[in-house]
Amino acid sequence: MKIVLQIILWIASFGFAFLIYKSVNAPIEFANVKQERFQKVINSLKDIRNTQEAFKLSNGRYAKDFNSLISFVETGKYVITQQRDTSYLEFNKDFGIDMLTEKKIIDTLDFVSVKDSLFKKDDRYKTMMNVPFAANGEKFTMDAGFVEKSSFRVAVFEAKVPKEVVLADQPKDLVAREKTYVNVEEVNGPDIKVGSMEEVSTNGNWPPIYDKKNQRN
Image (cartoon, rainbow, N blue to C red; front, side):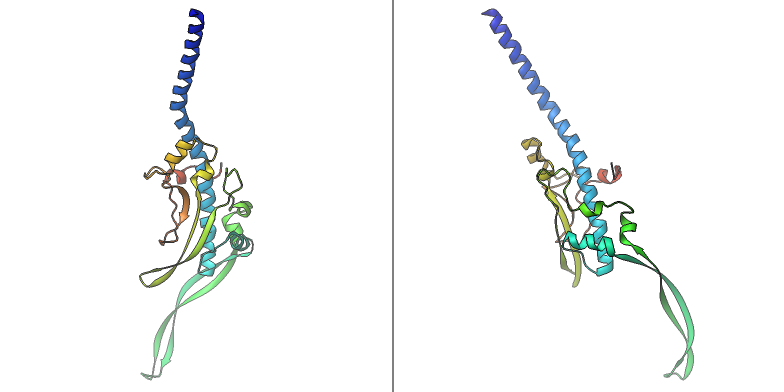
């Protein structure tokens, strides 16, 4: 009986030790997984933002869907211009004399492919709507429109994904805690996102550390 009790105590001791190890190590493992996955997601959101900004430069608005963005990358071009000043004498009817007229002239120098400018030879723009590590093939939610600011109509866009989609296979309690963070060193809130449909901003809700890391691992 004594031997049986000793065996049970040894098993219980190992069980408690394992639970203690998991309670200490699980948050560390979760943090490592989270940072790796968030970096990939943020890289994709940066691609979306860069493409949206190029789209707006050409169209005066942001794209509401990814098909429009992909088509724009494949066919769009940047116009490279040069501004120069010129002056000349022009007869002024009101004064009856020649007067110096100054103007600015914008010359078109060249056209550059949007794809070559943003992505070089990389075709990742074709899949930038796909959320990295999404277990069920989820895609980023994206919208675009206009808001009124100081009597001006300003174009806005937003792209986002819930954190729980990126961390679907992680401990539920740690994911739930992650969604509540409001901290300058963390990705705040329940989503990872860039832009806003309420404010005039193309910023992301991630801390600077995700901008300092290697963009493409």
